[in-house]
Length: 415
Image (cartoon, rainbow, N blue to C red):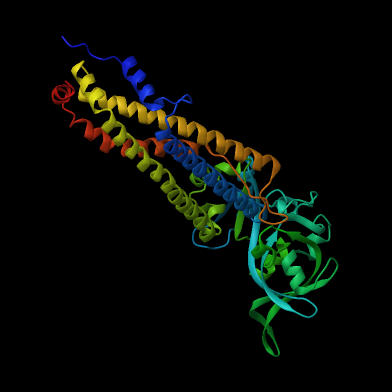
């Protein structure tokens, strides 16, 4: 009776075929495949981490200027019971602040420009938008760079301008600026005129986003309410949690408590930008995966060549009791061992590169912007799963070739 081969013999032969006569554990015919797998894994992990870093950096810049989450009326109407809603949200462990959003014309001494003006309560909104806090670190990308909204006069007649907006209007701290409504609704002997109010520049902030710096401004809530025609109502309630990474979970939780309102997170504020970042990550992942596919082609060729050279030996193994499925396991184990070794090397290389970049900030996009990196466990799981899947697909052809080996005929030829 033929003896059924055990797992130990298959593992021994797989290691033997993988190493050949090489002292480093991998034969020369497999070195190129190993390098391709390692470089493919390294590239996929590195690029995914860089794209995660860009996403995190954009998120931080958005929520630092606007907010992490936003509550508004479903029908786009104003919210009159905003004090009650703010109090309830705060009791749940979040920070909330009412906002009136208006598009106004700002006029300086010699120039006018449209701007998106947010009416805020300065005492509560500093907890929502860090951009309204004094910038203490010279390397920080957002914060107030001149003046302050802590001035008691800000609540009466102040305005905080984005740095680009202030530069365009030629304004600085203490200068006067006119807020002009685009709606002509003030009756006069000369017909309807727009509402105009003069405010004083008390703060200039940098948001780290050029479009925000060039078009955003903050004014006291009551001034924005007067331009919007509200007695005591707001457009939005902006919300911030302790963990912006879980903003979508927070949205679902809050939506269940405020079913009559629409709650959205930061990714919907500029959906086109966020969608472009996600698509770019997906596209880069697909492109770089072709590097791994090339390595898989090389693995297919190496195994086909190995089967061709080892035909007599494989025929002898069949005669000794190995079945077709045992030979398939033999080459499958060999391929998976090679793939595992390549994955480990790729993960180590990518980890070292990402650590060096995170600690030493070697790669910079310009003098102030460092190439961001953020490692996510989900990327590691995805890359490892894809690596094993492509390896398994690449050995399907060599495994089919094993079925054509006739042990009796090979032994007859050998004798």
